[in-house]
Length: 296
Image (cartoon, rainbow, N blue to C red; front, top):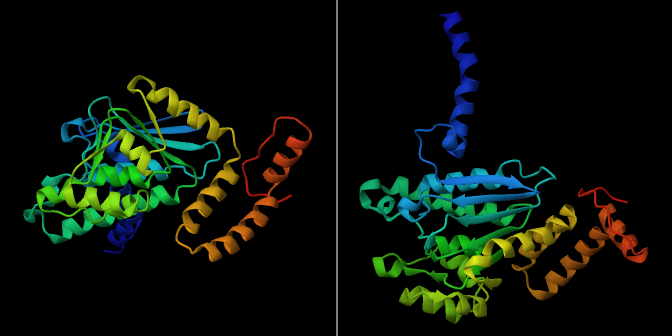
């Protein structure tokens, strides 16, 4: 009996490790017989995560969201990682939102709770990632797909892309997709999208503030490359500090934001990379970043 108990104790860490791996969907690409929801690769500091479940129109199913979470968080503190791009396989859809088949009553309230708690966690990871996250949109971004876009730091889209929160058409108000939407576009624009379910096109999305830049379909990859190269040429630590401040100050009134901003500016100046940047400008030379929070 003692021998059996010892054997179980030895196995428990392995079992727990496997359960954790399964939840984060680490194994999604490890087995050929398991469905792949995203593809991911890195090049020159850019991690590109491609939604590739075209069968479901890249719906943000539970497994798709777990795949995204793992790929966003994977090795995120490695200083070589400088930016993340989320795009989709060529087609007419970036993401159609939640998989409605997972939202039927037959799935049960516990399953629904898991879906929306996972979606909330995904959006938080986009916000809390130390590097900028860029959505490269080509096609339809609807409901939770529009939510995903709104939660990214930068959005580059093609001229034929559209954005919508059509849940009301199916008896489901886009409550959670509306959270980043109303923080990106004017309230009246968000209300029109949420109450009517009607889409806005790329030009309207740009004018409203949901999109950073519009390009022709054939120039999307080129523009994304230019953007990531500009970001990657900067100090990662300064970009990380700036992203954190940008996100946090939006929740503050202007007076509190200025007080907080003053503190952040002073902290920023203490960094070696800040002083390197200042002296490189004075001395008319290229800055040599160390990308850390080491102080001068």
